[in-house]
Each structure stands twice: as structure tokens, then as C-alpha cells.
Length: 290
Image 1 (cartoon, rainbow, N blue to C red):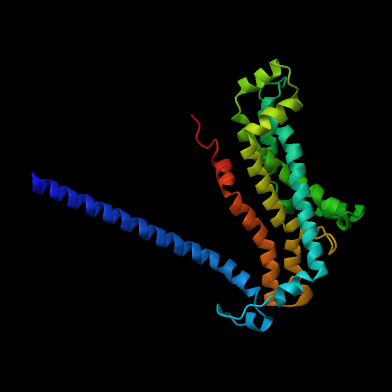
Image 2: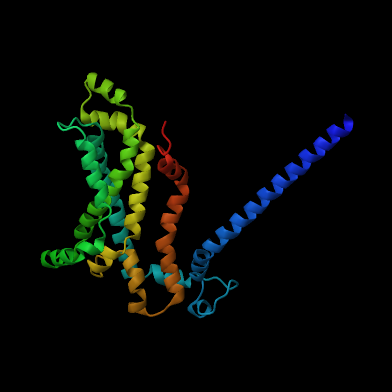
């Protein structure tokens, strides 16, 4: 009997040891892949602290300096591009949410005369996401040129809201559908208006989804390049456009390019890292329904 117990304990220890070894191996493999994919970003950030002479030679060990960052931050044109980007991200995301929240509320909870009208409108919004910007570039270019919109921030902001509003509604729709209709009906019986319903019930119950939608819209606007490159001037272009024009305007200054790219990449990375729990929760909410 004792031998059987000893053998069973030995098997349990071996199984636990194998499980622990597999866990360590899996962790090391995942860490190796993470370092492999993150290394270019790390090298880019490090190159921003090099001189141009040091940046020309690939190396990890070097004497860091802030001279390159001082040059980049002293560049008036670069700061102007950054201001334009922040302007579009803040206003574009805000307008998308201000319009998208009541629009999604109407699609989900409004009483249409024709049954299924709300879902049909929602499907129409979703299909507009599939429209590639290149398909409408020529008419947009002509319109911008004739109305002189390429010299104003408002023209590009209008396009960003139009292109990203369907994305915002698509993300919010599943969260609003998870709100029990009984709650909405009870609030209406108590005399709540649509505005009060949105402000006091819908927004508190779907704040995770709203944060997720706002985050993704902000990241999409921050990284948008195609429309900004083709429909703006140097005075109204955004940071991704500055990165593309950097080599044309100033030549191949690797250290300055790395510092500028770090400014472009670090803010969304930090924001995504801080809000990753809300983002994951928002994207997976409603994925499994009973």
C-alpha cells in the first residue's frame, strides 16, 4: 500500500514538474517572439538618442545624447504637423462619439414603422466601412481644390468624421444591443426623454464600449496617411505625412527620423497600454451570447 502511495506521489511530482517545464518553455518562446517583434521599435527609439554619425552605424552600445531630440522639437514645421494631428484626433474622436452614440441609440431602440428598418440602416453603415478611400480620391481631390479645403484643417476633419463614424457605430452597436430593453422601456414609462435615457442609462451601462470605440477611432485617425498625404498642404498635413516627406525635405537623417518616428509612435502605444484592459474587455464583450 505504501509503495503504491509512493509511486503515485512520484508520478504526481513528475507530472507537476513537466507541467512547470512546459509553462517555462512557453513563456520563453512567447518572450522571444515579443522581443523579436518589438526590437525594431526599441532600436528606433534608441536611435533617436544617437548623433547622426552614430546612427549611420548599426549598434546597440553608444553614448546617448539629447541633441537629436532638441533639433526635432525645435523644428517648427514638425511641431505644426503634430498640432494638426492632435487637433484631428481630439475633435474627430469627439465628434464621432457625439454623433455615433445617439445614432446607435436610434438604430437599436427607436421604433420604426417598418420592421427591421433599424437593422437595415445599421447594415448600410457597416458596408460603408468597406469603401476604400482610393475609390473616391479623385472627386475628393477636385472638391478640395475647387473649395480650397486643402488649406484648412476643417476639410480633412470632415473626411475623418465621415470615414470613421461608421466604425464608431459598428463598435457601439453590439454594446447597445446588450442593454436590456426592459430597462429602456421602464425608463420611458417613468417619463425619461431620449436625451435623459442616453445620458443617465445608456452611457453609464456602455461606458466600456464607448471607451473602446473612442480609443480605436483615435488610433485610426492618428495613423491615417492616405487622405492626409493627398488632400493637404504642408500647413495642414498630419504627422504621418511629415514622416513620409521627411526624406524628401531634409535628406536621410536617420537619428532625426528615428526621433520623429518615436514621437509619432509612443503616444498611441502608451495610451493603448494604459487602456488595454478596457480595450480587451470591450472587444470581447458580447462575443459569446447565450
